[in-house]
Amino acid sequence: MKNKFSFLTALWWILLLAVLGFFLLAATDKHSRESEDENRMLAAFPTLSGKSLADASFMNGFEDFLSDAFFGREGVTKFTDRVMDKFSVLTAEEEAVQKAEEMDRRLQAEGAADGENPAEKPAADAPAETAAPAATDAPEEPVHEDEPQAADAVDDPDENMEEEPLLGGDEIISRNTSYLWLKQTDGDVKKIYSFSRKNLETYAKTLRMMLDYLPADGQILFTQAPLASIGNRWTDQPSTYCGWGSSAETMLRECIGDEARIHVFNSMAILEPHIAAGEKMFYQTDHHWTAEGAYVVASEMMKAQGLPVVPYEEYDYKAIRSKARTKKGVRDTFNALYPLLPARSLIVTNRTNETELPLMNYSVPTYRTFMNNTRKPWRRIITGFNTGRKALVICDSFGNAFAPYLLPYYDEVHMADFRKGDFDKKLAGGSMGELMQYFGIDDVYIVTSTANGLRKNNSLIYLRKYLVE
Image (cartoon, one colour):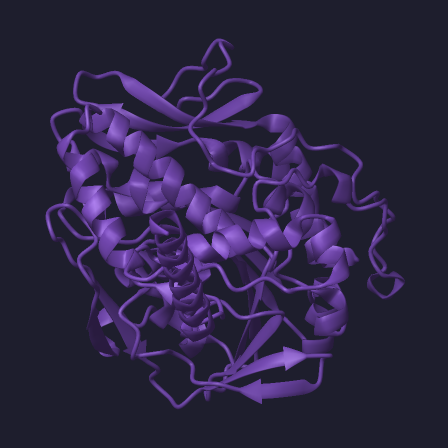
């Protein structure tokens, strides 16, 4: 009798817990949503179908959903992080490297299509040989004439740097390899990333192909910026580091040759004196550059074109405070500008279908305030200015803080994300090149982070694929 009673008690507890579990599951938000504490999108409830059950994608997605949706998750995560921090044996340098790797993974994941593994190698999706449209009178050139070196999906620091003899001068560069590095206080340097000439030659060909979709006076302006994990590294460790540098832009310029309509800007060189002066060019709680950092680089691009630069202070801003996401309780301020003239922001599908949404989102305490977050497949902003020119910003999320500063210089500013899965020709109504011609784009700004830049398949493969296919 006693055993029977114990069995019934256990059974009732199991049933009670099962009912409670089903209730919590039913009440939980099943959509993908932003975690402000982790600065990422939490997993949505996966689609249930025969195919998803057969290939195990449903169970894998369900596990991700459960780990992101359990009750009190953010409190447990914070407590666990505090405990781990107390017992951490990592040095400051090791923690900086770990932080850089995690930030790169987050930025890569932002560009992954729904249900897609951002760490998947995309080599199998490399574009076939495709010529530029006949309407451009472009010489026939294979889209993938030179196969770029495989690039990791995560922008981890290079462990085995090429031991090719370095050339003289202020830059760290060899005949076949360029680098991104940190300057050390002892006079030495710490190389972080390497960029092969072969990859940069491939990228230079893509830029030259892009000119065929622009008018005779059209220009391409390129830059890539490091993530905050690198941008803040030498300011957070002043006893170890005293600056930084990159020679990838020098080598890319060499690969481009004498084409005067393609301009390469070294964001690190532009930002370095501002950082040295104590200005905040990167966020502490986020992996992006600040609005001020984006403005400084945009201003240099305007100066290079002989255009008068709108002073930073001429804009009105809403100062949006972030939540504290660091051990020291540091918070960032996202200064989201108000446009000088009323602007219309439109999401474009099938070339002509347009859905209006606010230009900025002034209600969220994250980087997603800028340009109301990344949108696909194509965005069109009518600026209210009368300049006679139109621009396209091809970018990852770093472009969202940058694009607002282009508005006074163009009648329209268009935006497209070149990361894998973030541009869809069928949904957009054409390839990037076709849409550039359809909308009459004059100038193209390519603004990316190193997580998707000159050593990554997003730049080496997908930019060209989306341009012509």
